[in-house]
Length: 232
Image (cartoon, rainbow, N blue to C red; front, top):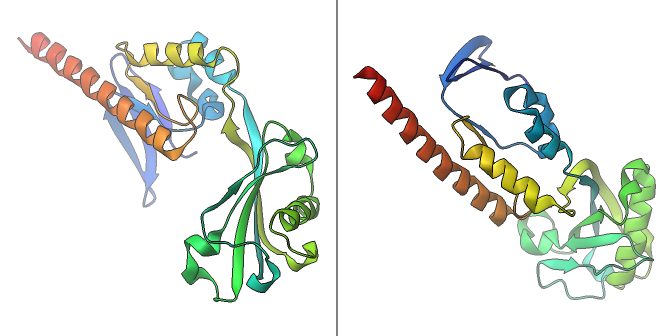
C-alpha cells in the first residue's frame, strides 16, 4: 500500500518508507507476490492485454469461524487434523480444522477449539451475511457433523470474512497462466507468484515462487551479459 513503483527505460524505481525515511531503490526486476485482483494497482507497468487476464481471474469469498466448546460435548473422536465436506445442496460448511488437536497447548485439556470454513463457489453470498448469521449456520452444521447435542454449546470466539479468498480455475484459466508466464520470459523484468497460477495450496504457491525465482535468475544473467557487452 505504501510502495510506489515507476519504470525508467531499462529498470524500475521502487519508493517506500522505512523508519519515517523515504527510500528509492533501483532494480532490474520486480516480483509480484500479491493476489491477481490487486494487480490492477500496478497495471501501468505492463501491457494492457496482461492486465485484462489478471482481472478475469475470479475470487470467491470465504469466512473462517473459530469456536470453543467442552470436549465432553463432542461425541466424535478428534484424533486427527479435521475434515472436509463433500458438496451437498443443503449444507454450507466446507470443512473444519480441529485446532486444539493440532496445537494442544492453546487451550485447557477439557476444551476443544474448532476452526471452520464456509463460503466458496457454491455459497458466494457469505460475504453479505452478518457475523451472527454466519455463526449460527456453522454451529448448526458443525453440531450435526460432530454429534454435539445442542449447537448452542459451541461458543464463537472469532469470525473473519475474506472477500477474495480462493481463486477459481474457470474455463480458459490455463491459457491465462500461459500468457502470464510468457510475459515473465520476455525482457520486461516483471514476474509473478501466487495461488492463482497453478495451484491454491501452500505447496503449490511455494512451487510457483521457486519457478519465478529461476526465471528471475535467468533474466538477470541476460541483463549482466548485455551490460558487459555495452561496457566493451
